[in-house]
Length: 318
Image 1 (cartoon, one colour):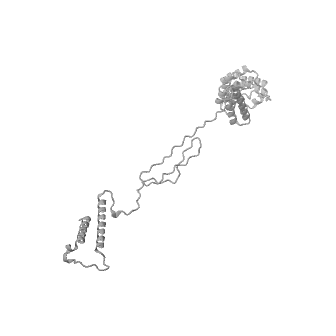
Image 2 (cartoon, rainbow, N blue to C red):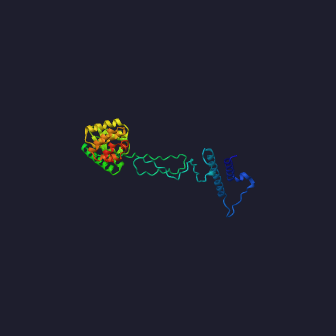
Image 3 (tube, one colour):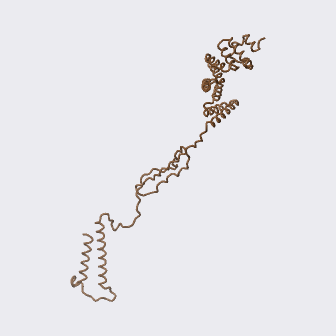
C-alpha cells in the first residue's frame, strides 16, 4: 500500500472521529466538561489536519519526482561540488623552447613563440595556430653606376700598374688578381695579357702562359715582346720547331732585339746545332752586351760550352 493511500485513510478516520465522537464510539467516549487549563480538542484537531496535509504534500512531491525522467529524488537534492570532466591525454610539455626557424638571408628579430592554450575542462581543446609572419622584404644590392668606356680603360690601366708593382715586389697572388681585373675592365689591354703570361711562365705553368701570349698576339700580331715570349715558351715545352718559327717572326718585326737572338741561340744549342747556336749568340751579344753574362751560367749551352769558338766568344779561353 502506498504512502499516499495510507495518509488519505488516516485523514478520513481522524475526520470521522472529529465530527461525531459519540456516534463513533458510543458509551466508550462519554462527554466530560473541559477542565480549566486543558487544551481544546479543536486545536488538537487542527494540528492533526496540518500534519496530514504535510504528509500529503511530501507524498505528491515524491510521486512527481519518480514519474518525471531525469529528475532527482527529494532526498538527494543536497548540493555537491560538480566533478570536472576528465581531460584528454595531452603530450607532456617540453621544457626546452621551440626551435627557431633558420634565418636564410636577412636577420630579423624573431617573434615570441605562441603561448600554449589556456586550461579547459571540456573534452575538445582547440590548438592555437599562430598566423605565419609576413615575408621579409627582399633587398636587392644597389647597382653601381655604369662606367664609361674611358673610365674603364683608365681603371684597367691602374690595375695593370698595380699588378706590375706587386709582381716586382714578390706578391705574385696579388699581382695575378690585379692583372685579371685589368683584363676584365679592358679585354683589349695586350700588356695585361703579356704580363699575366710572364707570371704563369715564372710558375712553370707553361700552358697557361702560352694561352696568354697568344691572346696578346691576337690583339697585336707585331707585339714583339709577346712574340719573343711565345717562342721561349715553346722552347720550354720542347717544341723546337714552333719556337724557331715564332722567334723568326719576332726578328722580322724587330731585328734589333738582342733577347730574341739570344733565345734563338738557346734553341739551336738544345737541338745540337752548335754553329747556329754560336752565330745567334754572337748577334745577341752585339745587340745586348749583357747576353755574354747570361750565357756563362745558362744550362742551355752545356753541350757547346767546351767549344773553343764559344769560349772565345765569352772571353773565357786561355
